[in-house]
Length: 276
Image 1 (cartoon, rainbow, N blue to C red):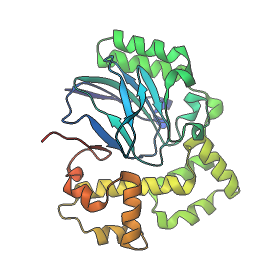
Image 2: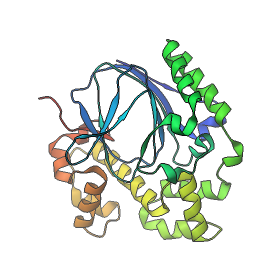
Image 3: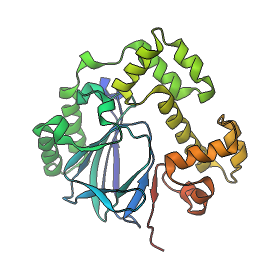
């Protein structure tokens, strides 16, 4: 399998979390669960294989996506298809980074997967065509970076105060949430409205998603997991509150999560029909 990432050297690095490319991926499953991460993605399939989303309960297909699509901010987990011999190219925006490129308030994409042409027009299909035709990862990364530079609208950048406050939500525990919101120099309503435009989510929901992803990282590093200690460490009022939120974001209770060995794999992708 080929897996490569691209390091940005210009102003784009302030708004793009990651650009990555993989080829010849051979998963041991066909459906996987994706938990919310607080990011918006542009996803290109370069293999001609249609992708599906699925109802989270019945696992019946409820959406089909080809060529290139946008995954907006999600508050809950999403069930998606995984395919043999996949070749994909992905642009992952920072939590506040998509608006200057997509030119649409991010809350309008909440909990949605949309065909990218609906938002970005034919130019995104032309970019995909070029990504398919250019063979090396470097050529693909250069094409994507040039496209992003052309799309970059500096009139739609978040102001310094908003950036600073969002960074506090990322860096500081949820127990500090009120103090962080109060530190924003304008009204709380203004902060919430700006968060919806740039991040899609309200500050509290975003902060909870950040906390949940920190928990997933912590679980991966623990040899022996003490759920009570984790619940206390991350500021839950009690263990039942912790279990409820864990299931809200992942679809599993903590014990199910461990029984399926999800703590040993990728932190945000969990196979639902693994072979064997």
